[in-house]
Structures are given as structure tokens and as C-alpha cells.
Length: 340
Ligand code: 13P
Image 1 (cartoon, helix red, strand yellow):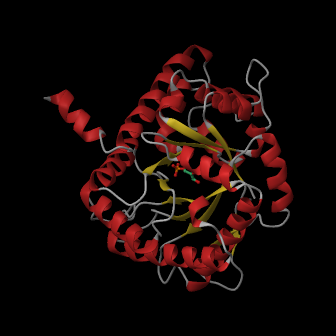
Image 2 (image 1 turned 135 degrees about the vertical axis):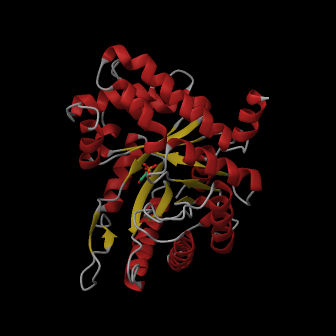
């Protein structure tokens, strides 16, 4: 366990004005996203599209790290340079998604999920480190519904997160723990706050039980928002206040930083929420680790056509820039300055 490397990696991931690009979509998710723009989801198209994102001019001004899929970690750019090395040269930390997706939790009702991937993880982490990965993500999924989440679901996922986090640190890889409370459903923002608090409490208790070093852990959190189909949608300031309240109650100040997923929020909402939180201020750097909210416009613009590459890169650079401003609480201020 290389403490100095873990410290350097964690600091770099949450460097001022920068955040993380999540480009680790599973084959199934990729299939859906590519289908939406009529592009066949082949290995070569995935390589080309992700290469487009990584080679966007100036991307390293706003992007500190990229979460890669196993496939991408082994792919090369057009010049034959492996993607992890290409990113490293740009000063961007390569990361890897290490969970193996979710399965139904036995003996529970409500279709709740637990994340798999602990078997053989140590061996995989050793290989990923050799291939250049310096941080690793694991996503747990918590669904809100009638009588759920159950204690079983929160507990099972917290323990899996803690076991994976300990294995990462032993391999000198920074864990990016992601207990995602889904925004799907009709639940209120109050209910989301309650569930997020319970989830984070259980997660940090499990990390302590497994001796995980908080100084070398990054939290990837979901924001406290109204359920997608809830009639009352909380506004930007309310989301920011509720999210920060939950985080300050549950997340130790020793953590080097907190990053957020976008979870199906619109591009603009994801930026506005992050900006509002940073204007309020927090004990940790707060930044983004978005997939959809960074990529939606770029993917649509590209639509599989080489002639659209530059325009797609511009769309991606714009969102990365806006979120970079939001990571410093300067997005709204700058918008207002422009409007004045
Ligand atoms: P979204 O920003 O699209 O929610 O994706 C982030 C992520 O990494 C999900 O695991």
C-alpha cells in the first residue's frame, strides 16, 4: 500500500476547478445510448467515440480523471498509444470501474439489488494497476419505493462497498465509492434526504469496520432531489441545502473530496446544483463525476459521423468548462456577469 501515491491520486482527482468524466458505461448501457443516435454499438465505435472525448483539445483544464471500462483500459488511440497512457500524458488520472453490476438480493421483496464483483477482485486490481489505473469505482444502487429501501439492501451494499474499498487501498488504488440513491419514482425530496442519510451512515460505518482509510477515499454521491415523477420538484437552492445537510451529517471531514453523479438530471440542472453547493461551501472539495450530463450533447452531435467530431468535442468541452466553473461556485456568477 503506497500511501504517498494514494494521497497524490486523491488530491489530483478533486483538484480545483476540475472533475471526473465517467466513461465506464457497461455494454448494455452503451448499447442504449448508441441506439438513441442510431450508431451500432461495436467495439470499434466505442473506441472511436471515447477517443473523441479523451482527445478533446483543452480537456485537461477541466477534467482531472476518467473512469474507464475494462475494454477501454485495454484499447489504444489512433496513434497506437494505450488510452491510460494517453490520459496520463495529459495529466488526467485513469480510473477503472471494477464492479460487475447488480443482482437481486435473495429473500427480499421489492426487487432490491446488491452489487457483485468481490470474487477475484484483488487479482483484477493488481492487473489494473499495471495497466495504469490509479482509482477504481464501485456503484451500489438504492431504490426508493413502497417500504424500500430495506435495511438488508442498505447493509448488504454498504459492506460490499467497504470490502471493495479496502481491497483497492491495499493495491494502492483510490476507491471511488458510489452508493447511488436512484431518482426514479414519485417520492418526495424529504424521502430522498432520509434515504440518502441512512445510506451514507451505513456506508461510513462499514468503511470503519473494514479499516478503510478515509484520507484515501473519494465519495461519489447522488444529490438529494425529488423523485423524477414527484409532483413537487425541489428547486436548485433546496437541492443544494438538503444535499449539503446530509453530507455534513454523515461524511467525515477527513475525506479528500466528494464527487457527484448526474443520475438522469438535465445537463443544466446538474451544473446548477453543483454550482449552488459550492457557493454555500463545504468541508471538502465538491465536484462532478458525470456521465450523461457531460456526454449527452457530445454524443448527439457526433451521431457516429467523423465529420461531426470537432463539433462533438466542442459540445463536450463546453459542458466540462461549465461544470469546472460550477466546481468553484463560479458558474452562475459568470453567467450573470455575461448577462449584465
Ligand atoms: P451519470 O452521471 O450518468 O449518472 O453516470 C455516473 C456514473 O458513473 C454512474 O455510475
